[in-house]
Each structure stands twice: as C-alpha cells, then as structure tokens.
Image (cartoon, rainbow, N blue to C red; front, side, top):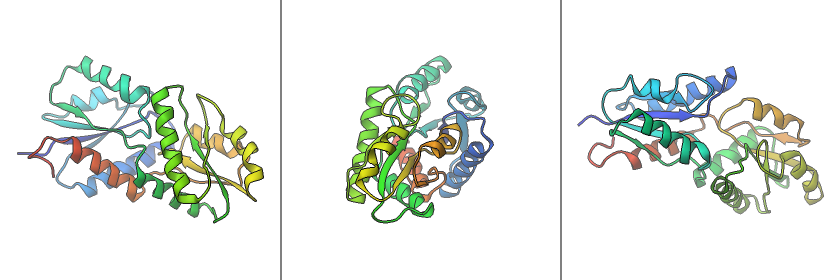
Length: 230
C-alpha cells in the first residue's frame, strides 16, 4: 500500500526569507522520507493554500501543522478548512511544539548567534491570546529552563502579554546579558521586530534544523494509518 502524502502546513508569509526557509524545510523532510510525496501549503495569507494543494493530491494525506503551539490555526482553522473540503482520507497530525527535541534546536540556534553560558535567556514567541497556546508556550519555557539552569520567562512578540521588550527590560538584573531564544520556525516580520527588543543576542528561527525535520517525520508517522507508515 502506498504511503500517504505529507502536507506540511505552515503559517502564511509573504516574506521572501520566510518562504525560502519553508521551502528548504520541505526539501529536508522529503529527503528524510524519500518514499513519501511531500508538499507545502500555507494556512493563510500566502499561497498555495491547503485546499488548493489537497485538490492536486489523489489518495490519503497526512497534514502536519508546522506550528509550535496548539492555537487557533491548529484547533479551529485547520479543522474548519478540512470540513469545508469534505474529504475523509485526510488526517491531521499533532503540531510540532512544544516538543523536547526542539529545545535542543533552540539552544543550537542561540549558540550559533553568540549565546554563552551565564547569559539570561528569554524565550521569544509569536504569542497568542489562546489559553491552550499559552499553556504550550509555558511548557516550552519549562523545558528550556531545565536545560539552561535558570527560570526562562516567555515574552510575546504580538498577541498576549507580557511583550518581549518588557521581559528583556525586567530580566537584566538576573545576569550580565539578556539573550533571546527564538521560538519561531521561519523569519518574517515577527523575527525582525525582535531586533528592537533590547537583547544582546537574538537567535535565528529554527528553520530546517535537523530536530525540526525529525519532529515533522515523527508527527507524520504517528498520524499515518498502521500498515502504511514508511
């Protein structure tokens, strides 16, 4: 039996760097699953949409929501879009975050940006007013706390409180330098705004880090019907 296709569903962006990052991630996932047809779609703003890509795929599909928390898109928007499409051969995997494997990716990106032991780390997330998403972000911060040795607060870039700049300002007494661990998957407006948050170092988004690829593959395999998992 043929393995279901994998539809990687990203948050919409028109940012060229962001779109290039999503393209590279899709290529990396395809390389990790050479026997699976991997496609990329966007939940909003950009094209192709999930509906248009699904229309081009015959047979079963596993949609992997490339989101770091179970917010509106994951719990409401995607199910509503699929209900409108009306296909019964499409299943939705769990979102990517929070996952312990991604914490290692965050720390790698922070080290690449110049982060050092002893820095005071703040987790910079896109933010949400959704209670479930906020709980997921607190879980991610707790996982990071266990790795860096001090409590890691969460700062929101947009939506929700407290905002990143306020958290950075309040965190300065804890250590010689405040650095941002970026809880984003791809660059765009949110990432650019972090440059004005007052931190000494801003880590790059997770992008196509091997840990991200690994979690996508895990989510796909967990959601694919038994007997057809690659």
